Image (cartoon, rainbow, N blue to C red; front, side, top):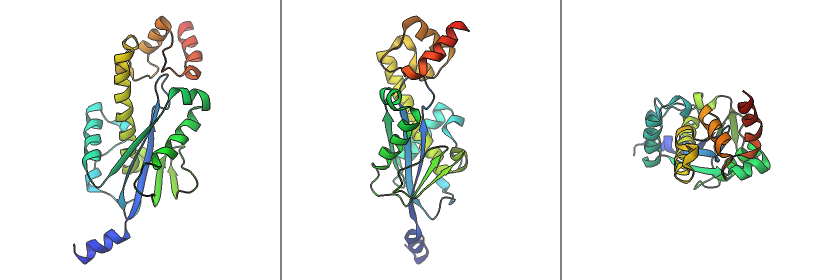
Length: 208
């Protein structure tokens, strides 16, 4: 390693990007994803992350490809955590997501020098942090966190289809689609439905 590379490594900070997936569905957990790596600052561009986008703007195939890159590259440390539908019903989605952000940060091998969070997320006060509106569109590391969260949650919901095939969770992942409304009206709620989310929207669907 030459002196320039040594200096760059010395100046790097361990920065973590965090985002969530599954804030709005009627069923299943919310997932908080986090990706950490060494950067000089939050604006440093990593060649390996060129072209990465917010998970909502990628196809399922592209998300899986990025997920594989992030998980297999030793430059990145990736973690995720699920917060159950029961916890969402008990504490509300906002507190559930904040709890998830706290717990996912505890999984890292070292405390981050800086935590970058999307939207309305925030971390416990002991972390140096910055919340960025539409951060998943502006900061590649937050976009990476969104991909980890989305892929991890989608896999869980696909598995839930095996247990509750009548709801077609493999198709809509718990979101409030027309088909999902129809299945709830026909079969009622199952164990993974968010009861605090479902009541009013199903009533509207019935009357719509």
